[in-house]
Length: 330
Image 1 (cartoon, rainbow, N blue to C red):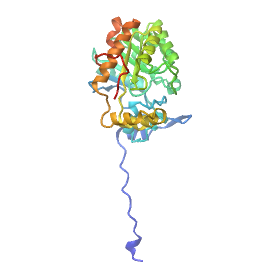
Image 2 (cartoon, rainbow, N blue to C red):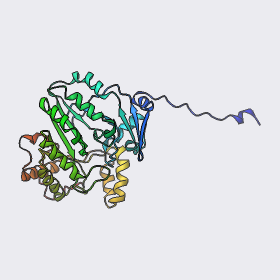
Image 3 (cartoon, helix red, strand yellow):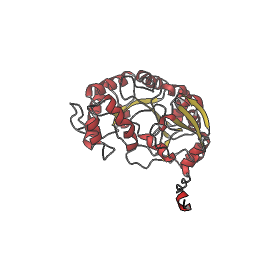
Image 4 (cartoon, helix red, strand yellow):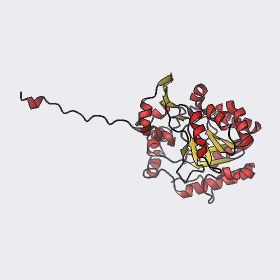
């Protein structure tokens, strides 16, 4: 046989990992749970400047990468792609624990100017189950308690936030701080503390002197956006003593659609084609939908006495027109 016939074409060598993908590849496995694995993540920075004009904050802090709550619609799944992880479920099964978070924050807080707000938990839940063991969020709050004049917001679906009520109260003495408990429905949600526990956390935080309210985000068109469902949620928030309540419509990045649309197909098959068509070439719904949602929420807040001096925190969508019927995605 001719020697040339014995040659096998060699594949191109893999490209070297760079940036956060390289750091993630060097992470040490520190614990495994049920279908969840935890890794250390060496971090060069903790504070990230938000560049989106849609967001009402300047800086973000995410104590972890990935989130065990595994919300099907979660827009933050794309963050694992920066680490060269393309399987959408890696986001909920491979949780990265940021190292030296409090020390990094201490070095970086000087970048925050007066009037610039910090949001904790924009791309992960800072009180997901990992926090019980690793306490990265707690360490961050302990550092923030040493400072004054900051504007801080926390977003979570977990009543574990009550563990840190004394630290939050300490922060509130010299800073402005709000805790947003996300409740998308008053029905049971999988893999996150029950909505009634979250609403009780709102009550307990306010009693402890920590401003807390409810974020209904995302609102799922034709699934959770009926006025009677949103009214039940606003009523429950009012009964829990929420200082404010706001709602944001679903926006769907491609990485999230790959997980969310099969879920819709399984549980709401009559809607899947409509969802695919609406989100085929855009992540956001038309402006009119947000306007109708905003108008409905404003009417419900007025009905149940939520707002007053906290109205500004309830403005998370455009004001708009008459919302008497289901909000009408299509």
